[in-house]
Length: 370
Image (tube, rainbow, N blue to C red; front, side, top):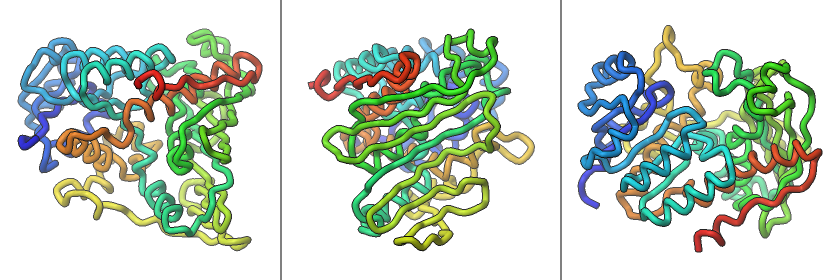
């Protein structure tokens, strides 16, 4: 592929963060944006000088000039929009999670294979500076053999859009699941999960999920390593944290437990606070600055920045991987099989919790796709 990838973005809340990244990327051209609220569409498109403007997702899919679509629409629409875009002949990047049911995950895997187009789930944590640093520590032997992994994501979602209210904690678990599975280099095989505590009856009635916290144990395919995942969304007093911990033979990494306390590397029995570097040097210079800044300013910040500190500088890394996968004619790092597995951990974990902790096996998406 010699021409630049002609990108469109659907959903301009969090999605606006990616507009200047695609505009600056040497292999991409942002040609359109889509937002159902016309006033917001006009304001954002005017601000960034985006020529193509759509209030309807289906209308955008009919534009033959668009090569790829980055979907940032509400969670309940992810599967529907992904499948429609793939069937329209577009490459798809989609924010997390991939879907909300196992059937939707299966349908997306099938749609990718039928379309021959690229699909990438835009999971931020595995491109955060913390993850990239620990991945280096694993690859250079500092950690030694990985013995156990733990992921956690605790966040109070009051004040977010209505579809979040009462969402089962594990249905939005990829921020905790993805780093542990990625570092282990394995896909999840099965999960056992318990639900703990109770949220208000009003919240619980939305999705039929009563639990304040869900905590799961994950087994991995062809790996002796196990993982623990903990997740909460409502009515649990805790400072926001997306975190992972790696217990290694020679050293262990522990995510800071409160904002600003510092990440810790335990070498043998000696803990020391470590500074995690930025990884902008791994990006084209045109988009490298976006590891440390975003679209929103101090007076108009998106909730993901207020609570998530800009996702660890991951946004330009994600955009770069997606664009380059298309240019190079290869599968992206977080392809449909990986995305379906990571998403299914949470779906199956919630099923296990609702069944009192019964073990639930994950679907084998590789077998389905072969």
